[in-house]
Every structure is written in structure tokens, then in C-alpha cells.
Figure 1: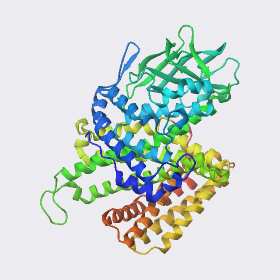
Figure 2: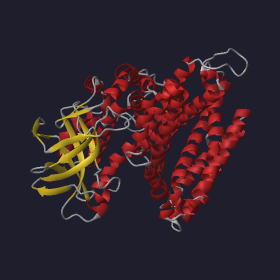
Figure 3: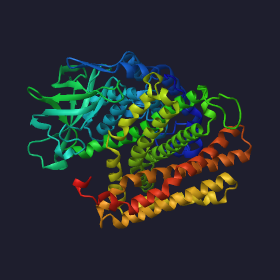
Figure 4: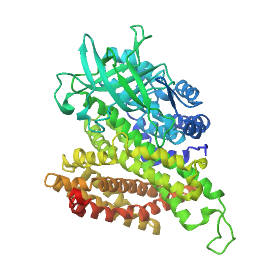
Length: 596
């Protein structure tokens, strides 16, 4: 199924009613961001995605990128689509105006990025990596480096990559062996990197690689890693392209999914060494790379949401058309399967999780805007702490949920879902990588319980509990059976979350293995409680709109029912997760290795 329709009504609800566009439109640098402008951006993005890149999703998957003698060719239509993407200014959406960008807030960009990823995830990966490279150079590059590279990266003339992984290192960057030798005003880079998304392609004339490498006299471990700019083509003083640098694509990977996105093996300096330029200070490369990594992790989390929505749209369309079996209520012999209770249960599960993720993702994006732009330091710090806490949740919970939702989409299709021609299987194949790259779910959960909770004694998480209690209090005043049910489930889930926060804070130093044994369940618990918090807030807003006599009764009634579904089918898992987190570590760790 090549069709994609952006869920604009729900996006506008989240943007304007749930999160509140005014929270960011009043920030310095966002004065020109108003509802009319944002509507125009969302409408145009929806059109571009539906007409230009969504039709390439299925064909790009079938054709894939191909490698020939060190060159990589993207599938038919990708090069022209990227040209339109860059010419339309989409690549410049988030970048600061001083570097040629549009300076739009993260909140608005988040919804636009969701559309890109839903319509064609493989295509969207190229600008995603470029955005991360741009952020790193803005924050740590020299003025000369910014002048040389940023204008053409921002406008999309050049793309960017992040080069971390090596075959012997995986996620353990302390084992990086790529070497950098000083040579005058530059360095010579020698080594090999794997799993480099869009590390080689035919979309642009130049590719700017940001590469982690180690100096000969560097201290051991992650403290001895530096970050370098290594362009595919060197750049002359006048900005024109110079000689081909000594970085080459040895091959591209043959993967389960995202076939249209080339995942390259890059070889640096087989002869004299590739020329590289130091970013920032020596031996601080990992610190700088995390600038890119955090942007990428948030963006990958959006991929979980985006693929879930694409899978849902396809499953819903199929369920409305597929005629099979009689209506259990005694109706016709053959009805669309959307009328069968279990199919309805699966569709509601897809819908509820998608709406919870979208709401939470936009809430985090708004906090990122406030943390970056608010004039008050204390306000910036508060929102930065919340964003830091939630980024591993966005990355981990969204992607795990995205895989689950895509799998449900296959299930709704039945046997036809397992057949490639229907397209349902592609969503599941594409989604599967999202829980792995940019840090596996366990890496996200270790970050959550370690850096974001254990080290600070749960201060930020406890502040979040306090804020959620205010929503709980508002639910207690709301009338109606649906609101009572939502309140009961949310209260139970919030209590389970608070109990686990206290337990982790108390036991992190005493028994760190026990804490980490339950870290992934805790990440999931955090996600479903935070998602339930947003769904509860949405239900409260919907009830207020209905009380005012809105013309969109069906939409707001749907919000309340979907929030109730999430409460009774997703939030209800909180008690079991609390047991796994607080009591389950012994069974995880008890067996000797030979007993496994």
C-alpha cells in the first residue's frame, strides 16, 4: 500500500490543545510562529509526503540501493524526490536562520518529521543524520568550519553522517581503533567504520562524515576518542569542491528492512590517510558525538510512532474492505472484519498507542524548545531535565511499541499480511531495526536508570510524579463512567511508577545488577504511565470541549474512548511491571551460565 494520509486532525489537537503552541510561539526566536503558519507547514508537508515520497516507499523497498565499484545508487525516484525535498526547504526546517535555516521550533518539526518517517522511513534517514551533524557543528565547530560546511548542509546540497561503530566495537566505543595522526593543520584518518547510514549515495555532490577516531597518545577507553570532519570531497577555500578524499565505500549491508537506505562499510585511508579536521578539542569526541546521538535517538523514537501510524492506516483500510465470517451479533453471513470484536480490539490497541506516543513525543519536543530558548535559567534547566529523562523513553518505548503495532498490522491482514505484495510485512521489517540502532533498548534503559535516575536519586522522576499527580487530581473531579475508569487506571499506574522510582533510587548503589535486571521493564512502565498521563489530559480536554457544545463531537468522544482503552488495556500492565522490576531480578540472575 503506497498511500499515506497524514493524521492532521490529531496532530493539530496535540499541537494546539494538548501541548499548546503558545508555549513555544512566545519564546525568543519563535515570535513569527503562529497557528496560521503552522497549519500551512503541516498541510504542505502532508501533500509532499503523500504525493512525492510515500509512493516510493514500496518500490524503494523492492528495488533497494545497490553498490557498484565503490559507488552507491539509490532506488529509482529517490534522487528526484531528494532534489524536491531540498528545494522545498524541508532540510532547513530546524536549523538557525544565521546558518540559512528556518529556525522552526522542535515542536513543529516533530510533527513534520513524523510525516516524513511514516511516508517513507528509508528516505527520511538521510536528512535525519544530516540534522544531527549540523547540530554538532553548530555547537562545537570553529567559525571557519561552520562557514565551510553548514550553509550547504543546511540547504541540503550536502548531507552528513555519524561514524561511530566498528566491527570489533559495536556499541562499546571504548574499543574504537580508527586512528588519527596529526599532520599540520589537519589529521590523517585510517580505519574502518560499519553500519553508516547513507555513508555513500548518489543524492548529493558531497557527504560530510563526522568520525570518531583515536590519537596515538590518547588516553585509553572513551576518554581518548576525538571527533573529526572527514568530507568525501575536500572543500577549496572558495567553497568549491576539491580533490576526492581517501574515504571509500567497501560495500553496503543486505538487511531485513529499510532496503532503500544504504548502510555502508566505509574505509578510511588505505594509502596516505583520509584528511580530517578536528571538531572541538582532542579526546572529547564522545561528548560531542552525543550531541548528534541525542538528536538521533529522539528522531528514531519518532520512527516507532511513524511506522506504527503507517501500519495502522493500512490495517484499518484492509479491515474495512476484507469480507469474512458472519457478524457475531446475528447479522449478515459475511461482513467486513472491522466488525469482529478481536479485530476491533487490535485496531483500538494500535490507535491508542499511536495517540499516546504522538502526545508524549510532542510534549518532550516542547520541553526541548523551552530548554533551548527560554530566558529564565531555572525554567530552562527544569525542562532540560525532563527532556533528558524522557529521551531514552521516547527512543526505547516508542520503538518497541512500533514493532508491536506493526506486528499487529500483519495479524489483522491474516495470511495476506505475511505476503510481501500487500506491504504490511514491510512495516514490520522496517520497524525491527529501530529498537537496535542508535542504542538498543537495553542501552536506553541503562541510561534511564543509571544516568537519569540512579545518579541523581530520582529527583527529576519524582518531580514528574508530582506533576502527574495534578492530572490525577483533575481526573478525580471529572464526571462520567469513562473518566472514572481512566482515573482508576491512571492512579494505579502512577503509584506503581512512583514505587519503582523510589525502589531504584534506594537500591541503585546497593545492588546495581538487580536494578539493571529490571531496567527495560522500568522503561516500558515509564512509557505507558507517561503515555497514560497524556491520554488522560487529552480526555479532560475532550470532555471540556464536549461540554461547550463543539461541532466535532465524534472526534472528542473518540478521544475519551481511546483514552479509556489505553487505561484499561495498556496502563493496566503497570502492576505486573512493578513486580518484575522490584521482585524479578533474582530469577533473572540466579542461574549459572551453563544452566542457561
